[in-house]
Length: 258
Image (cartoon, rainbow, N blue to C red; front, side):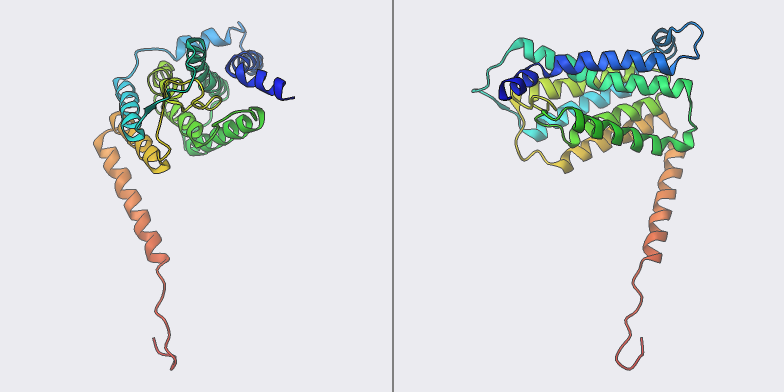
């Protein structure tokens, strides 16, 4: 049993990539069954491609730099670095997210849902992605919150920059895949084949702040400052109301007075 488990783990990304591609093709054809030409992939790619937004490139680069500097990477001298495994890990991490994102784009194209349901879509798809990944890839070494944030960022780009699918590809190539293949944030192999490993004190708070900065930067660039100010005022107003209604009342004394 251990031999089989080790064989599956060693070829993890190859097996995942093949299985995801086969599943994706079948589901994409099923979703686009109403398409007369049945050329689902070509139609979506022609509609959803264009020039990559510079804010996505900048956000991806900033996330990579912040993660490296806050994670204090150290060289793994005892790790047997295999170029083939590093390349497979890089490509595997790109396709791991990209295939599911592309499937969601196809689903949204043929069965669109209004923008008012956007937050629910983000929560639903992220939850499904994480639960199924944990259930299917039970042999994974580091399948944790990091994949949720990566997938959420990809979905965020798809939702707010819906006319260009290449923005997601840029994020995966510049930030997600290098962090996995070179710095040990690999959901399947961990740092077993990476060149570096981030410090164990690489906190969740640091990661969340980095991602929030990326989210906010893209949101600001895609919306006017007036829209951002209006959203900020609304959030402050809601927080003020929440604090007002949840403020504890005065405590009564022994004589019944307040």
